[in-house]
Image (cartoon, rainbow, N blue to C red):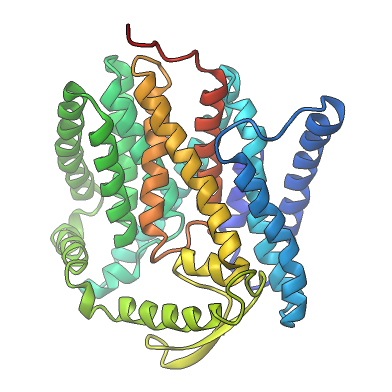
Length: 404
């Protein structure tokens, strides 16, 4: 219910805390409170059981203490609360870590996430088709794009590719082919170049950790899915097929000329302004909810905002160098643990999930330069799932065989 309930958050467009967001927060933190009560008070267990857990708890503590700095800098408290609630969503990692050790738990959790991604993909697809069919110019095809929740589509694509790469069962590979084709198209129709690059980088990670036979299978999947995606576009967008293909390629190759991209130039101006704001309190940060000012090249006006596209500068500005290092230490600890486990358990049936979790986490590190994956609601959910997948496996898997 918590995972499916994220659909309510994804539709949130207001600057403040909406009634739906507040209701979901009460539900989520009610569930989390019961879990922590059971773990810490009744069972007297420990929260620190996997790589990066200590650093993560330190990060949560720093995020909580940021209210002091937010008050000192006279930040708006509803903005502090809005950002704080997003970071508290990372606490879902702890119950996920335990639930993902159990086969029944994995069916429920991964199934709920898939239904969430599928519902949003279908909604985006139908909305894009409606907007694209009335477009008169190529730029309108990009304007009709549905940029919501791209991380969901990227996550399903990389997970499906990892399972295809490892599995030899025809039924599973057929299902993975259908899923990768569908969600690849959903990702393409967002026209979000950063996530295209992220999916490509994630694919490189899978290719790098795959065995020789698995690499050949992955390369074959890329070719077949490419043809399949073109076929799907031809069926559903036959009226504008040529224009749509041209628009996709123009959008793709404009990435190579990003130096002349006004959107990138605007983000560089934004980053420079945040960099200057960081030095007002580089150690402890200015607190969640803190705002900064910069001149937007896109809107041709001066903006006063809390939003930062660069996730690393965002964390440094809000929580200081201590918060940034604590989060990256936790994040990096999970990646290293995932790599170690994937290399040490090559025949384990859950190895594809480990590989996809590592690929997704590494892809998000790159995307976070231009899009705040550490703060976006959908990305927070995906990150906690990846962390839970790795940590749950770490506690559950038998020791890797030692060489004789």
